[in-house]
Amino acid sequence: MTAQAASRAREMALRVSIGAGPGRLVQLVLVEGTLLAVCAAAIGAVFAWWSAPFVAARINPPDNPIQLSLPADWRVVGFGFALTLGVTLLFGLAPALRASAVQPASVLKGGDRPHSRRRLMHFLVGVQAAFCFLVLLVAGLFVATFDRLSNQPTGFSAERLLTLDAVTATDQPQEFWDQVAERLRAVPGVETVAISDWPLMDGWGFRSNSISIAGALPTGEGAWFKDISPGWIGAMRIPFLDGRDFRENDTTPGVAIVNQAFARQYFDGANPIGKWFEGTEGYMKGFRFQIVGLVADARYRYLRQPILPVAYTPFHRSHADGRGQAIDRGTFVVRTSGPNPIALASTLRREVARARPGFRVSNVRTQLSLKESQTVRERLLAMLALFFAVVALLLAGVGLYGVLDYSVLQRRREIGIRLAIGAQAGSIARVVTVQVFSMVLVGALAGLVLGVASVRYIEALLYQVRATDWGILALPSVTILAAAVVAAVPAVMRAVRIDPVTMLRAE
Image (cartoon, rainbow, N blue to C red):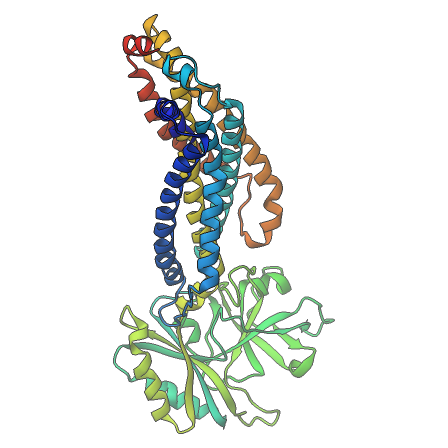
């Protein structure tokens, strides 16, 4: 609006010369700015109405949809109206006052225009560049966090895997659970069925704070436990490194399969097959387990957690006298042959209820959705940060273009003289851009310092990424440079196309 007001100096001078007062000129410029702001606010309202559900859809797991309620009540409309009016007055009043203060005699005679406060505008360009760099840096951190967390190896294959959480009205013996699993194996499209106490990576877990290795003194490091049926490790595609899987007659307590982290923590990485350990607290106290298998590491609870030492124990529990212990809840892990496991969800739910009276499926989820649910926050932050980074970059580009265009308008007489005495296009481009580009550089450096200093406030939201990584720093630097070049092209082209004869004759 400042550049537009400067380009209309002759028009404003004519209006003053035929009797228009300063108030009339201020009213003219403000009304034009208000119309622009109202149109922009209407477009923004439509965009907000579309973008909020769009963002929710991007973080919406298909098998566990969420709803977003965004009523546009009077408070929302009033806030939008007040913000639009405030922005219009804030950014339109100064150009309006400057336009109303034009001196008709000087302008109509071709004299010099009032000298603009280019230093202030260049300073604001630097501030805007610093803010844009900061937003781009934070966006890069959040996007990198989401990418690295999403691509963390889990140690198992989540493709075509469905989990059915089942509960029973009363405790059911192990044989009944096995009968239900056998019924599910007969469903067309089912490849493998196994049972565990809960799915991997759903946040649940059981930890014994201390265990004893081969009768030695208990350690305070503890270990995590998980009950699984024979075939569960194969269904999850967790590689066996040594030993064997569970057999139908294996029970808890009795035998266990451990992962590599367990072997590293308690056996210094040596082969633990044939060795034993014992629980020393809680209901695990006195339970002795002989290690019969060693498997690769797999994620247990959360993606952000390091690999935990895990001991897998048989889903079949027994009393001290050897009798089977009844179980009232568990999870059927089903690997399907088709690419879309959720398509079998309703069929499998019905088959569980038909297999044994009293069995009921309380929840059906894909293993992929369990993994994706742990990155909902990171996905949302990455999307919002990227959105605001694009907005900040667009605003910085528009502001830079406005300043450059305004600078060309103010210096067109100087540029015409330079062209008249033989200045080349490259020299004119440097004259137009060097001061503004230097402020962009200063602003980017200030944004870098501010970003590195303030990243500690969001450090808990980041994962395996630092603000000083070259890749993270390169993104905002290259992006701002590209935006500055794009914004400068129209102003440079306008400057080099100035006709010296026409300009000097007009002046």
